[in-house]
Structures are given as C-alpha cells and as structure tokens.
Amino acid sequence: MPSAIRIHRHPLSGHSHRVELFAKFGGINHELVDVDLLSGEHKKEPFLSLNPAGQVPVIEDGDTAISDSNAILVYLARKYAPDWLPTDPVLEAEVQKFLSLAAGDIAHGAATARLVTVFGAQLDAERPKAVAKSAFDRLETHLDGRDWLVGTTPTVADVAIYSYTAHAPEGNVSLDDYPNIRGLLSRVEALPGFVPMQSTKVGLAA
Image (cartoon, rainbow, N blue to C red):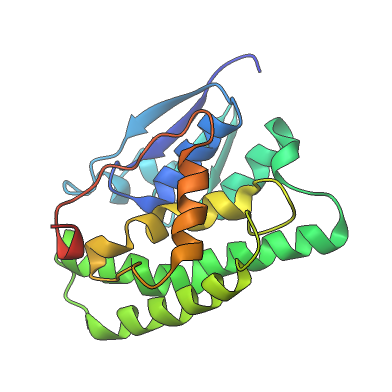
C-alpha cells in the first residue's frame, strides 16, 4: 500500500473503533484523524464533502472516500485483508447476517443505551436495553460451542459486533448472563494488534 489510509473518527464512537480495530488486525497502514463532534465539525465542510450524512467514521484511501463502518470493514477486508472475509457463499452470507445485526439490534440496543449514559441523549433508556437483551440472547445461543461467529477463524463479523458489545455495561446493559459472549470478547482482545476503545465510567461501568 503506497500510503496510509486516513480514518476520520471520534474516540468514543464504537462505529469508529471497529474500523480502527480492523485496520490494526489487518496490518493496514493508517492514521487516525479525530473529528470534534462536540463543536459540530462533522456537520460542516470540509467533512461533509467526505460524508454528506455528517457521521463518523469515514476513511480516505487515496482519492476514495468511504463512509458507514460496516461498508468500510468489507472494503478494507476485500482490498487489504482478505482472510477476514470468506468467499464461500454460505459463510459470506453468515458474515453479512452479523453485519446486519451490528447495524440493527446492536446499534439500536447496546449502542443507543450507551448514548443515554455517555452522551446524555434524551432517549427512552429502557427500550434499547430490551433490544440489547434480545440481541445478546441470540448471540449467546449462537456462540454455544463456537469460538467465532462465523467459521473457525475471526472475521469482520467479530470485529463489527465487538465495540458496542464490550462497552454495553456503560449503557447499563449487563454481560453477566452471557459467558459465551464474554468469551468471544476475550478472544478478540487476545488477537495481535488489539487496541481498546476509550472507556467511560458510567452506567454499570462506573
């Protein structure tokens, strides 16, 4: 790779963290560019030229700009770390299923619950906790007898669900009843190159 990709991120964003984490796991040359969300930097130019939706993360790879954390994971895996995205149609479909879970019930569950405690979002705090419980119940069952979400090696699926799941206690979502999930998180954390997301002492993590 001729030059480093640029990852525009916020250190408390789990969507950003999953991209940074995968760049480390994949040995992808990169630099981090912090975006000041509190000042609204993401809602102004030049950031809006990178992502008109005004959201982090965004990567720049040469002249290419890509937004949406899961889309970024797929792009980076296909281009730079193909071992992390299986080409077998059945396994690839399984990976896509968990990317959808990350963008769906985990985003609307654990991630949203954390918005209330970490960022003071004026949202119903109970509904996202219920959504998180349903998602984690399914994950726990799926992981019974498995080391990884798909196949026998880590994939972008494991990276996609890691950040907001690991930080769920910050949103008052307990992981105590989910030994299989905690085992998966520990295995991700043991991979070479792992970098933690900045933690916040709120909720059950206080």
